[in-house]
Length: 366
Image (tube, helix red, strand yellow):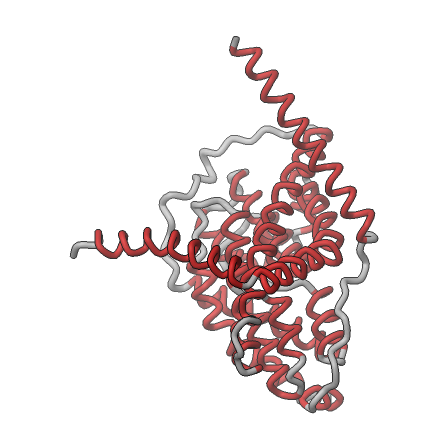
């Protein structure tokens, strides 16, 4: 079978899409600027203050010996995926607490250190790539759907569905021969200063990549406002595009449609999340197992949520129409101004540090 014509079409698709996007920017500049402005506000108000400090702390934990101890409570769950490294349990906990971006960074760090094979990293990503409790409980549950209890049930359902779908996928996922060998990988224990500098540098790089994709998908969301789509269809498209905007738009529908589309958005993660993960993790770690697990994840999440909601009669009120959704927030975070300027300062610091290292290497070669 000749695959050359299909590859040529794929190579043409990207520049044609870019050209179409540029044309839309020229035709609808106000909608484009509104979408990017809203994405920048999201980065400034919530994403950087909530995620950036967490990325630094988790990278320090994984680079030190603390990950072996902190991963012990969740190591039995990892053994169900045939992963016996205790550090894997720490990565799962980080994913459950910090969300899919923190999970991707943590799993990639363990993979690069030779503590996970490619297949193990893929299964671990399936098991813990979800939104964190701060967003699901506080933002979606309390702020958008008007019920903290519903947020708690949603988060529990998402976690259980992630674990179950990963266990099912593990039975069919073939091995990846391109992954590094755990026995051949040699390790050198880094000292404290190096751990801190590397943690900050990698977190700044990850944060820049995440914000870049958030801005781009914010642009695409702005274009959706150009078309007069029904509210339900617009909410569905946004739910599949980006999770935070998808949940916020879905919550405006009220009642059962709001709960259903919020669950779909949280389960599917959205194209933006997959693009962020592709930028954050090594190319050898495949993303199609995670995408395949999402097909199981949504019905599992919805089924578990409906089952748990029967034991809490108060949650029935969330299926009734709700007024305007409240503004969502992330608790327990740095003030947005402090976190933003800390991020900029560390970005400049890491840039200067990388430049000085490259200069020293160049002098040694000369």
